Image (tube, rainbow, N blue to C red; front, top):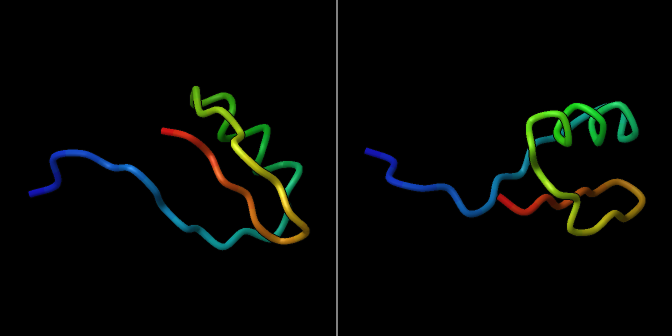
Length: 41
């Protein structure tokens, strides 16, 4: 059983659209690199 989630890695095709999507979910962008996004949960 999952009791919490600290970090997840999800491959995406479109970084900018993904940033907007995850921000709508209430996640805060922690860092952005060429092909890698990190969000704080």
